[in-house]
Image 1 (cartoon, one colour):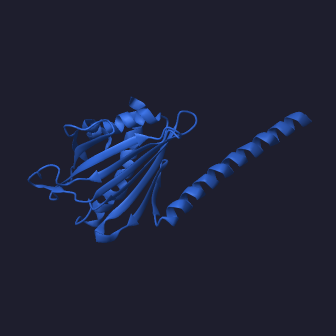
Image 2 (cartoon, helix red, strand yellow; image 1 turned 60 degrees about the horizontal axis):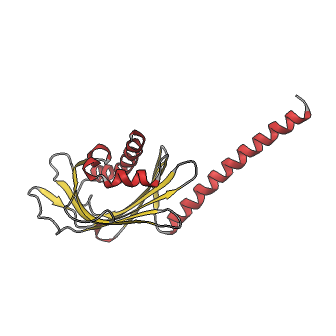
Length: 216
């Protein structure tokens, strides 16, 4: 191996180390930002990060993040298609958009299936969403509106469900997807089921979203 080849080989190794350092640094910055907001990393599985933060009244705030090979508009198309939620949202049995509204502001209904003898949970929420013309970041805000529909017999209406989605365009046709939810959906359930819904569920949901995007 001549001098030029040795130099090139060393240069390649240095670049690889530099890239790894950048990835590690980015991860540390993200972790520090979550900790400053009181979040604790609960799960890091297959590129899906889940942080949790206990709140008052037995509420729990869950933040889940992932990157996907898709465009902002493709992600928005999937999460706007409520009737298809049972295909990718964990434990979702039924979902639909309520009559009225616009693409930027509308309401929806969703029901989560729970194993016997526990009652299913249902959410009614009002959605407002927009895309920043300067950054291209898509923001979707969901506020629980539990009295917007009559309650269904035998199903527990979730009173607290506030959610924010952010979809940020990255290079190489990728997006960073972050969803933060504060809810009491797991209240009154045994720890094993509460954990499965509140922390395991977001991982399965985000993986399902990526699969849905790749399928489309």
